Image (cartoon, rainbow, N blue to C red; front, side):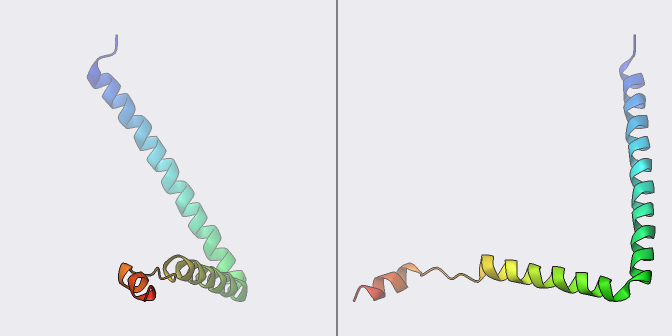
Length: 78
């Protein structure tokens, strides 16, 4: 029968293996991204500019709408 310490050690091993796998995947993605940017600098700039523009449009759409305050609504009645 497994004790609580054995179970904790097993869980810790699972978490460590998962973390190690994640670090390896991140390192691989970093290398591939770096290669792509080195080989396609203008395409990378275009993608970055597009993402920035879409983000700005989205933020403006969300926060750019100004609702009338209660005072403005009251003043419009007269």
